[in-house]
Image (cartoon, each protein chain N blue to C red):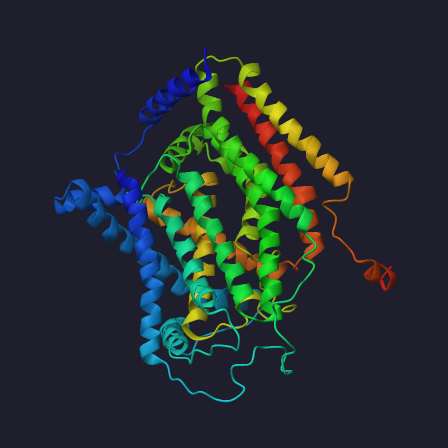
Length: 371
Length: 135
């Protein structure tokens, strides 16, 4: 038997099992919008895609608007026993509007000697990379813009483009702090990208597919039934070790404490964003927050059953899981000190990398034994 | 095919939103040119020279290792996809597991070699070693 045969047969087998799993009949969002408008072919795909994309992007912008100027302050304040914003509107919620207007109407100061096209493009690249990752995220309730067969690979590829934006910002700013921040961003990328993806690969071994909706469907199957309560086969329950590794590597990937070396406010001012003001600063900030939520969305999809959950509709559960991850990042921010750069690289290459490969090998053996 | 059109549509929106915000801000914000405002930030001091300097990035060897391991993760992915379906088809465990373990083993040997040669260590300059103040 040649290798080609195996691939061909197994592809069919995957499709067959995927159909057998109790999967609700939900077409990707772009297709269902096109169907609703009665369009088909390329026109339908483009129009449906644009409307769906606009919807998803606005959901994420609203989420970020709540998270950035309001929730982050409130959470940090709760951890440090303070009150934070409470003057404008109920619970200080209207600070979101006030802050957006304030930040957008600030003067844009272009420092001396910045590398102009790169300096202007960096905020766009960072926001773009965080937003485009959401194209393949299954929000549940039929809210998945597209469902390509290579979803997992695509979402990691999209999320890593942000590093390019950070390096562009760091180099173009003509500021020593920015330069250090950009170089630290590369360091965090080369140290934690591989553990992140190899740990995700251990999930792929379990699921046998790269398609996001299929990975969610596999996790819907029951694992054990304890006293009448069926525990689903979420990969965080099946393989908690991989989940812990993934969460740590994810923190480094999105540059949050204890791995927030690219920004490190107490060491290098604001890292790569030192020289940014006005709308450019808003865009960098926005991109970072969407990136946190993208990290949460990836973790929720791969390890926490995606939109699965009792009673409430799928979308609500997915949203709750994303916010739970955001809360976790803010918790880490309040509770864990930052690593030094050499400790950071050591932990990545001598700890996380070795552990993630051990996890991959063990998962492969485990799957081999149980199948 | 269809799904990549939708992904591309999100790409268009994801570039359009930043551009829209930049346009909105350009209409709102003032411009007050002033001497000294455009100096880069160096803790309040007058900036000394440019930031385009030659600079030891310390993790040069790690960056080289990264390229190898990154390509490796790409090569692992096809195997992870076919692994479980192949086992369910009845292919023996040794036939799907051993070749990949050999592949991983070669890389682990490489990593151990690099590790023992100090490629993963943080490079310290001799001067920093001499002037070390902490124990």
